[in-house]
Length: 406
Image 1: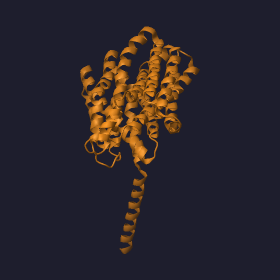
Image 2 (image 1 turned 120 degrees about the vertical axis):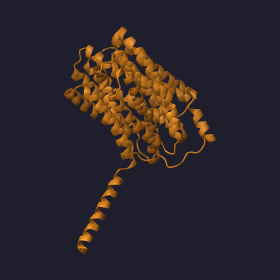
Image 3 (image 1 turned 45 degrees about the vertical axis):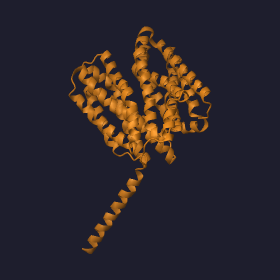
Image 4 (image 1 turned 180 degrees about the vertical axis):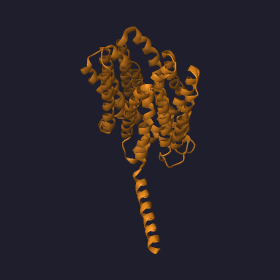
């Protein structure tokens, strides 16, 4: 009996030690990486197959455009408010978790949504609740990374892995079960994202007080022309990436490329993006964030010019490799630029302001490019090249207004 008690006690102690060691392995970095990985899954399903599902339930192409644009428009109104709310909370985690849970529950209502207006309302609320927490998550993860001496860009590498994995898996499932499988997948991954948010760590350990003089000064920096111009510049580049998923695949198909070749080109861009996320820290050690934004704008100008020339497959592979510079490099440069010039008191608000800029330019691009591409086809990418070049001029103006190494 004594031996049995001893063995039971020893087994319990061993089991407790295993649990303790296991919990230590789930560092804040691991938990945040897992959240980014899961977060990308519902995004991947939507970007790849939402249009197919909407078409299957009788939504027209023009109505689909409205449904996709509505959350982007709403984020213009609520984006900065959510960021400000997150900054005032004891920890950014509070808003991230609540937003993730809300964005997990709202898509369930799509099962009951009827017709264009029903889908539009539910879709807008569901997607906006997800979009609103993205800049808060970025701001929180970036500040935590800087305090702990880690690389924020690695989180986005995990995000890309999750995106690619789910696009491939969803493509297989849709080919097997048809468009009706989209909604269960979207809802399932949204719920999974809400569950993953519960495992996020606390991102800061202090309680915010009322705004100090320092806080007011840093808030003022958000509206300084030298600070806003680089963010507007890259927003002009970012909005053109919205057009890739909506138009470029169709252009390539019309140019005679096979579905397999188009898939290869998309995989090349995603792979190059992932590599940039992994090595970005090396660039930042040598070059200022603002100069990297300028590089992104200039490379984007070249990329869109090449696309407008309707080149062959070999050149298009090079064009897709440039995605590492036009998207990954530019985005990470902007987030670091924001963090360099704003304090933690307004970190989420500043990052949300950046998303608002991206949303505003995206709406303008989406509404104008469709008309332009219908008129002149792939030559419409000369217009996006012009936007990217204007962006490079805005960055140079910022450098003139404030000559700084940052």
